[in-house]
Image (cartoon, rainbow, N blue to C red; front, side, top):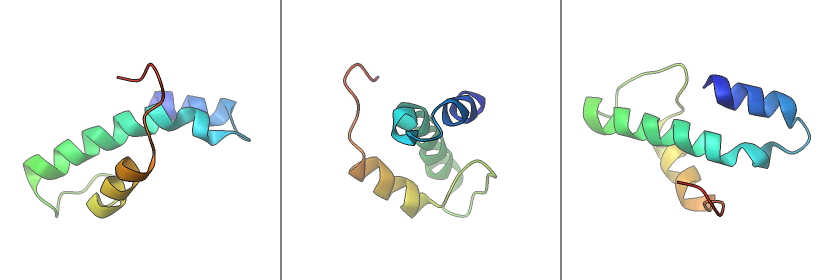
Length: 65
């Protein structure tokens, strides 16, 4: 989350440059929901449907893991 915040601060006018940081955070959040259930909560994570939709819509960048 800290790396994402730093990236967003550096790329104010171009936040899509931070997509891989968002992907890493959302992948972690999705794992939390899968382990703890749909009612799990975190201040860093949006709801599970939002995460799933974003992961489907935003393609991986070349060189991403």
